[in-house]
Figure 1: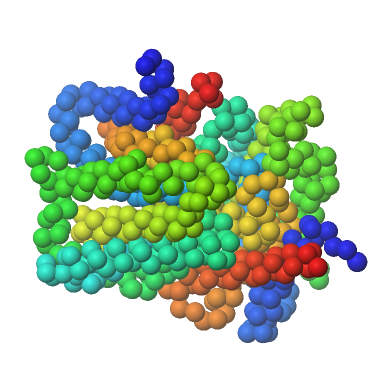
Figure 2: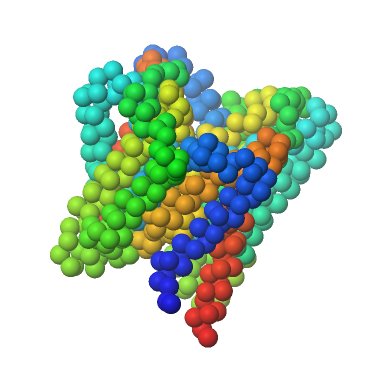
Length: 313
Length: 315
């Protein structure tokens, strides 16, 4: 059987997730249950959605440094306006998606570095979030709460949601013609343009889609935490980038994998739980998370080399 | 030389022009009363951004993808450990400085080992490194706030002829960095690597050595900045470096260094650092709340990059 390079790209992230999961089960067999799994992966859902959003931006060779503040802003909107007057909340979200599309167009037309523009936007979203919720508070919309705490039979909600996210985004990014164009723009935008497509349009749509997924991440986060604050998701910027890379994605060339990104987000979440099961002192938890990141990436390098050696034979 | 050509070749002019506009607007609002105090505060706080910004600029010059995210953690660890080591004794000041430089060297070396040996993209390598460094800082800090030695604190908070000492230190470092960048073979090498790593390697430039030195240089500048910042603010805090992550990137890019690498400039870092500080104090003077202040800061960053970034038509 011949494996496609996309499948090989997925083996390493999946293997590291399985390994980590096995280690957790070994140390804490009680985690091997419906409730246990739900607790382990609950927080992964918003992170997975944010990772997908970051992955979309990365597929056109850009990087979004405002992801964390934008998800925080969306969480604040969801916990305040969306809850009290849903229509206005939806309008704000539509405006935010339009803003994302606008950023995409601006970056393309003026050939600006995406890092700087999104850096500037991170101040804007942060400021808006502070205006909405100067101090932690707000209430999650009851439907968001209901979705995030739903208890489907056999498989916990966190797993169902992750699989659903992976399936939907796999279809959009890998199977649909829009996804091909998007990744093509990341690979070589000039040839996409020569083939008669509007790169501006593709970029705008990619950014808008990323905005949509980031909004979903904000809503999912509020559904879990029941209230929000302006700094609730700041670490998502770095987490989402790390998730994409862990999942086998690359910074340039439109080489991304939605399934890998979701797995990467799950791995990052699980690493946190793994460390608390290890009874590592809280001082070293962040450091150990860094170490896990390094180990997984080293593993990926080793496997990539193995794969190359096989090709040469 | 036409004006337009001058502006294209000297992109740092923009950041200085913006700085002057903001300074004048702020001083006008307060009726000129604040001009001295404002300038001094701006010089002091800009100096910290300049020091970390120079390091970040060297790294960014290396080309696409090169960035050091471990700057805040390095600052924190260096500030914490140096103050702990000096233990309020004046005699240990130099020793503390050496220790913080040593910390920078080790972190820079670690960063590049991850990048080179494990082939991890720099953004993730330095991020993982910063997690580990942050942990060491938390472990060694234990919530204690150790004061800096008196002489050092006095040096960090006073000035010479009305210019803050910190700004003078930053100026000396900038001059050294400028000489390194413009007059030394090392500076030519990093620009060459930033423009095309492949061509640089073909030309016989020691690419790996140059990159290693650059990452170490960046970490050393960050740790020296942490040492000075901790002395200036009367003690190290675990979050003291956090705002310098975005700041170090912002000042480099607003200052006119090409994000794609291969082209850098140091005067622009000064302009951008002063500008970033003055914008915040201007918005403060005008009595804006935290939210509006952040939003306006964001829009101003984007406006500056829009104005300065439109080089396409002149190419």
